[in-house]
Image (cartoon, rainbow, N blue to C red; front, side, top):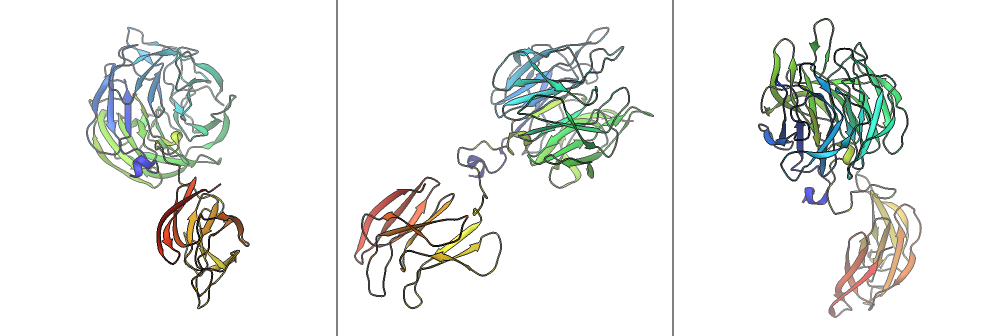
Amino acid sequence: DAVMGGYWPNANSTGLFFGGFSPAYVSTIAKVNISSPGDATVFGDLSVTGPIGNGGAVGSFTRAIFAGGVTPSSTPVAVNPIQYVTFATEGNTADFGDLTNVRERLSGASNSTRGVFPGGFANLESPDYKNIIDYVTMTSTGNATDFGDLTQARRAIASAASPTRAIFGGGDTGSTVNTIDFIELSTTGNATDFGDLTKITMNAGGASSSTRYVCVGGNTPTPSSTSFTTLEFVTIASQGNATDYGDLTISRQSDSANNSVKSVNYAGFNNPAGVVNTIDIFTINTGGTATDFGDALTNNFRCRGASNSHGGLNDGYQGTRPLPFNEAGGDRGIIAGGQSPGTLNEMGFITISSTGNENDFGDLTQARQGLGGIGGKTRAIFGGGNASPVVTASAVIDYVEFSTKGNAADFGDLTSGRFTSGANNNTRGVFMAGATPTRGNIIDYITIA
């Protein structure tokens, strides 16, 4: 019920990991169910480029998009194709378009409408570090468009997003850095300095909820490609330095795919163990030490992960019901009328998420008991009831706004006066059956707004 309603991240959230090195170049796309620990399975192959590593990946609710990378040859060559798959249909990639420049060691971040690919470099032999940020529209196909520039030209960045911001952590400018940049996804323009990671790191994974960005593992090339277990986070809506709050099960370069609650970290390179097939998982909002999830298809590193329920997608919301709300008054319950011993016109309120005594809200237009109550998104509505100790059925409907306090105003009348009860969704309320005092089966409805 929670999954259908959209207030829990998708129970079947899919993480895909594209290409990599094993240590030979890999063409396979690996799949994990983030909500169900187990070994990776085969989703399909990179059919546009064949075996490739060091690309960047992003995900929407329906698509995963993989861009750039490096293909095998006597001198490995950076490329610019963008390719995509549909999460719901296992199979090989299809052509999407091209990046603005050939490059590898780029990364990716997205919300539901736009994916961005920051950084990278074009030549392994004489690295040409890029400050490029390209973007694509997730639901279309076509070539990428220039978004702006990073604060530093660099490769091997850990990227992730909220629905509004993308965060870029660490990387390599020729030396490893602890820089954190950010952009607003709905605009275009250059990145802005956010703060610093706790360590200089490159080749780390990026994970996010809608509020928190996590830099996962990574390594530094000096003095001996030391790899990290470190998990560190920032609050996306703010700016400032990262905080260390956990560890992977094994230190390594890795990449991540997440469902806004948990991050799955796939394979990687550990110094001195080499390429590993470890998959572990941690909870984004609490950190701590990751736990074992399963095994990768093979020992693999420098693949890129994407999911259909990460933090850039509103915490995985995919339901058709309205999102939960807690707006002004959204945590308020109102109790109206009653008898003590005569009929009452008073209204009291409580704050639902706390405990404590009722407080005065205001008065009904008419003292009565046995009335029906309806709570819309912004209004409370009370209909019918008994207007005196002697049975006198009332047809009056009153309303108040949750966000204010004060007396009720007239809304209208029931089709007939009666004791009754109420129920509603966010648009329509119904007053059901009741007594006049003779029992009846009438159902009336109103439009709450």
